[in-house]
Length: 224
Picture 1 (cartoon, rainbow, N blue to C red):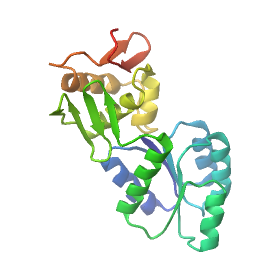
Picture 2 (cartoon, rainbow, N blue to C red):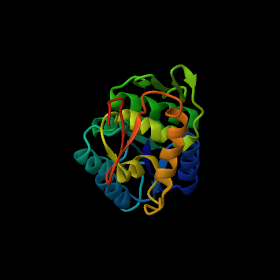
Picture 3 (cartoon, one colour):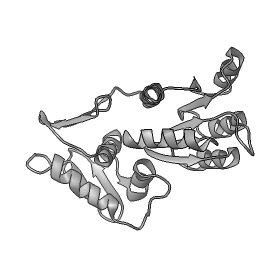
C-alpha cells in the first residue's frame, strides 16, 4: 500500500513516515500544497494524509483538486484546525476522515487501515485457493501453515492478492509497494517475487505466482 503525506512540518511528516514505513507502507512526503496536488492528481496512491495549512496552495484546494481526479481515494485531513466548523467544512469538501493535532500515531494508523478497508470494500481476509492473508493481524498462511513474511514481502503479496488473476506490471508493483525514490532499474521486484515463490509456492500445489513474459506477474490458481 502506498501513502502520500502532504505536510509542511518536517518533524510531523517524518514521524508519520517512519511509523507507516515500519508497518510496511510505501510512503511519499511532500511539503507544500502545489506539489501535493500534483502528486495526488498524477500518481496512483492508496491513501492521502493531508494538512490544511500549507504553503503555496491551501489544503482545501489540494483536497478539491485530488478529489476531482480520484473520487474514491481515501483522504484523511490531519490538522491543528479542530473546530466543529473546520471539521464539517473538510468533510463536506470531500475528506474521508478528519484527525486533529496533536494525535496518537496508533489512532492515525487505525484510521488509515479503516479507510483502506472501506475504500476497497473488502474484508481484512484475502484468499486465493489455500493461500490466506489477514491484513488486520498481518499474518499469512498456506494450507494452514504459517508463512513468515518480511514487511515488503507482505506488502507485495497483499498487492498480488488484491489483484488476483490479473496481470500486474513491474511498474504497477513499484507504484504500490515502493516509494517515489525507488530505483526503477534495479531488480528488487524480481528478488522479492523469487523470495515469495520460495515461501508460498515451494512444496505446494498448485503454483500461484506466474511470470507473464515481458509484462510482469499474475497470482492465480488457474493453469498457465
